[in-house]
Amino acid sequence: MGKKIGLVSIALIVFMVFLMAFVSIASAAPGDHSNVVNTVHNVTRGLPGANPCEGCHIPHDASGAFLWARNPHASGGGSSVGPSSTTAIKPLCYSCHDGTVAVTGMKTVFDPTKANHKTKAASTLITSGSQKGQPYGPGRDCDLCHNPHDDGNTDFLIYGRTGANGAHVTVTPGGNVCVACHAGNLDASLGGTGINHRTHIVPSAVSMPIDAIWNPFAGDYTGTRLFDPTTNLVSAKANAVLACESCHTPHGSITDENSLNTMAPAQLCINCHK
Amino acid sequence: MKSRRFWYLVLVGGALTVLAVSLVSGCAGSENNGTVSTSAGQLVPGQGSENESQPVSDKVWQATLALHVEIGPSLPADQPADMAVIDGTMFVVDTGHGQLVEVTADGKSSLVLDGQVDPKLVLSAPMAIASNQGQLYVADSGTGRVLILAPSGKVSQVITLARGNSADALPPRPIGIAVWSDGSFAVSDANNHRLIKYDTAGNLLWTVGSGVPATGENGFNVPGGLALDRDGNVYVVDILNAQVKKYSADGKFVSAFGQSGDTAGRFSRAKAVAVDDAGNIYVSDSLAVAVQVFDQAGTYLGLVGRKDPGDQNSAPLFEAPHGLKIMDGKLYVVDRYAGLFVFDLPATPQGAGS
Image (cartoon, rainbow over all chains, first blue to last red; front, side, top):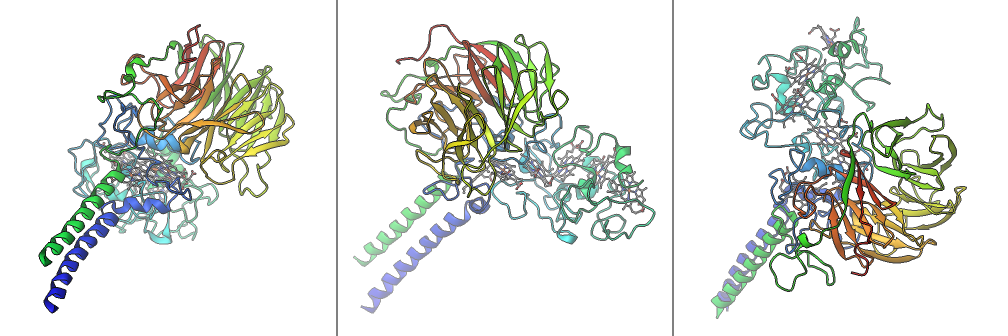
């Protein structure tokens, strides 16, 4: 009798192991994808029986001829219709962020006169920052900086913004959207000097200005005309600090030159140095 | 005996695991192996199976490209979303710049209508336009207003849209508009998921929708483009429900069709609609990069928008097709990136009765 219970419990344990495998696969395999459920990207929230993934992963009817000209996967494929974007991700994002489903991004991201942020070929590996060793491409697109499944860092950004003041894209190595790949342009493979950003931005926190120690609102730099907090370049967001976005824009610029957020670099400097 | 039970449990566990794995990968959809069953009566182009309907290449919708105006000197617009046509002249909604661009019938020259023409003509993300008796009705999504103006750009009326229900948290965000011959008009309110009809003076007549995303006959999840048919019924693209819904002029549900999917006859991201005199329904889809055509029963009849009209898998003519109009035997398509397209439709009506 006791032996029987023993065997049953072994069987139960084995079963539990499978059950745990089930649970862990079900919850872990989609990984952060399931985080989408509680974000604005779950466009079927509150609708009974709705699939939170289908807003983007449009269901495919196996018997039908594929009509979706733009497969949303970075790897492409699935359609013989040539997409006119590098990847199909941008058209997918635009299919909502075009002023219909979502109002954000139409003007800031999809202005056709702006060149997109550049990427590199598949074979190129990121040589510094938290993404070191990861390939840049191919055709990595909005997913260079965004993970549409996860809003943990706000704005669906991949990398956290952990700088001082909880600020908007700060210059804290490893904790910055840009520095994850650019390491403040210590990255010689990106044409940097290998020592410093070509301007005075040195994220090693040795030189200034770095937002972690420089606060435009504190008036700690005399002799330099700093931000007008109401119309500063960084954006209207609070706690704007000198950061990559003071001079660059993540979504490309009309200059197509270094993603600078103004046409003339000289003008760029005059914004702060009057 | 005992060991048999043991293996039974092992088997159940294993099956559950396999199920879990397939569920997970199925949900991801990354291999395009999702299985959405084909609903009866809907013609989905077949691949193989004998009792399937005709292959898609036989479903050619006749439409001959007559004019393409790219964004540029003749169409200085940023992400235009819609157009109206008066006596062949096209009035394009320049959504990005917040103005209208008047394009001549030959597509060769254009004129910008903005605040310089009439100080009242100030727009913020206008998304849709319709015409009636030589007047233009513009749905200004950024300000929740409808502007009524003459083709000259002179504004005769600015209507701040009343909420469909006073309990709605946000003012209407009109992204679709349709105008009846008596001057009354309907807008689709993307903020509150409603279809709302007003009289010419802007008084609310009726509304369909509950104020929040919903499914079913009288529910929407982001209503988009609108169009009227000859009999005054209004058609609504229910973008995130992947449906087109039809209501009578007094707001009664008539019919609906459509299903989310990435194959011909399904909606990936349907945006706007137009109806021809034979009652065929044209639906622009910015992910399928095509204008698909359906009959009143929702049967798929073919598509417009491929370089080789006979081959749905040839390169697309469009980038992100949006606003549609059908006028005097012509199909007008506004593309957010690729500009303006005008197609000649054949004189003999297609699709009717099929």
